[in-house]
Amino acid sequence: MLDALYANRFKPEALLEKSIEGFSDPIQFDEVLGKKPLPLAAYIEHLRHDSMGDYTAEKTGKIRIAGRFMGQRGPFAKLQDAYGQVQLYIQKGGIGEDEASIQKTDELVKLLDIGDYIGVTGTLFATQTGEITLHVDELIFLSKALKPLPIVKRDKQGNVYDAFTDPEQRYRQRYVDLTVNPQFKEIFIKRSNIIRSMRRFFDEQGWLEVETPILQPIHGGAAARPFKTHHNTLDMPLYMRIANELYLKRLIVGGFDGVYEIGKMFRNEGMDRTHNPEFTSMEIYVAYKDYIWMMQMVEQLLESIAREVNGSPEVTYQGNTINFEGPYERLSMYESIKKYTDIDISEMDEQEIRALCKTWHLEVDESMGRGKLIDEIFGEKVEHHLIQPTYITDYPLEMTPLAKKHRSKPGLVERFELFVNGKEIANAYSELNDPIDQRERFEDQLKLAERGDEEAMALDEDFLRALEYGMPPTSGLGIGIDRLTMLLTDQHSIQEVLFFPQMRPEGH
RNA sequence: GAUUCCGUAGCUCAGCUGGUAGAGCAAUACACUUUUAAUGUAUGGGCCCUGGGUUCGAAUCCCAGCGGAAUCACCA
Image (cartoon, rainbow, N blue to C red; front, side, top):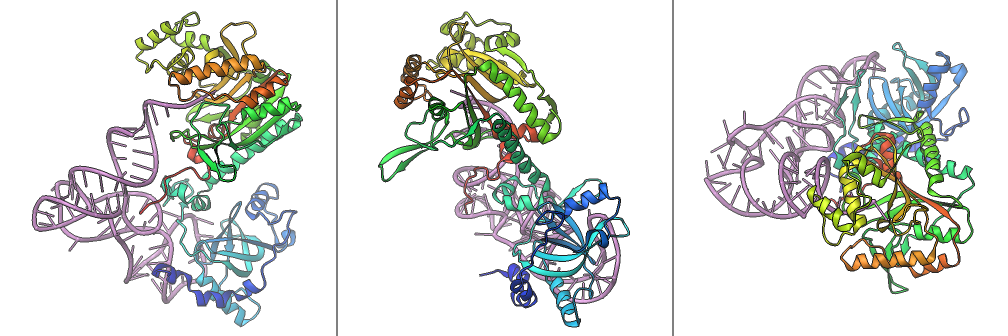
């Protein structure tokens, strides 16, 4: 049952009567300037810059567009399509073939509400104030907005009135946010451009985009708590993937030179402004390469994305200017700790490092191995200093069960993480391809699990079997797409780069 | 999970030390057929998040719950 608001707004009998032509003879939107449908707002922008006002009817001909009616002031109305807003001139008593149709159109215009979809045909002209405007000579009703949109107004100084800003409503009703807040819509367009740009970069190298299982019997490849589900026919538990690394490596074993996957990962952990339970990652594995090669590849990749998406390798993020031009600073894990604390821990054993942590009042417990302790120090003392893109390399072996041992530094692995603005955005290894070593590393993880480390990695026998058939030397990389998007769009919160961030259900 | 702040009209918000609701925009009607957020006049519109408590009386004070935000914890 419609309440008073909607009954008042819908005026069903009246509208049906006025709009019958629109339903029976659906408008066909012409192809104009090779674009269909015509992005009129973009076209007008083009005319402003390139044609110096040559937007006469002779030049542009009749134009038909469709979109949302977004308010009226006298004979001037706004029509909004996917690309922006265009002013319409709707002259009372001036639209129609004969008296009857003129009257009908006038009545239809009076019944329009903000948000209604209409289609119009007309010619362009410039008003006294110079705004390029569509002089409407045909108008049909297409679809009704029963609920009123919150209308945001902006003046010439850029002041915003009556903004639709409540984050809860913006996220829950993203369709409204996208309709009335073009600045937030832009973020999502940019996100799409980032992914397209990345995909093109990889495709140009000849690497293959693949898809691997999201439902996995063993949740391998990372350390995190999974979402668990159940398959009825097989009557077995399945896990939503926390990573796809072990599957992509199986494909390298299968003979591909380079494979990558862009997709959702799922981690059953806390939510905050940089974590959502499902998030998008890009993982790539390239055969016959190592992590040194990968560092240089990442520099080229990020610089080219930044240039393509923002027009410059420099971006401003929360007041910091970040430059994605390579090469980036490279510091080993130990060097970085030495640089920011003046203490060299490279020769210390687990007990000494634990003692050091205690003098700094870091939260440590007996379940933490040497690797975790070092990670704790790094997170507390170093991470926040790394504003410009910086590679941290050569991690302690215990922290990284899937990376290859360092070619010259005992106890370390060939790994780097890329930090930007104090946050990790990429992680890469020279991949461990020795099945015997890999089995030992998994067994070390089991020991950590026995000590109470809930994130220790599970052993995957089939993955070991794949390695036993032989895997070429390979370098692998993962990039968090959401965090990269946050950086390139200057957003503080992951929710602003996800169309539908996870929320608690609305309850009453 | 902890702490702090917030929840009032479709939207943005005001409601002081308790006396049962206000503005602007949006909506409706009429007039105006024009401009560049905002024409005028009039009108309608509220389980003041939910449930308890204190009180003669609660949007306001107290408790619990629900939802959101920030910070912290967690998070390779």
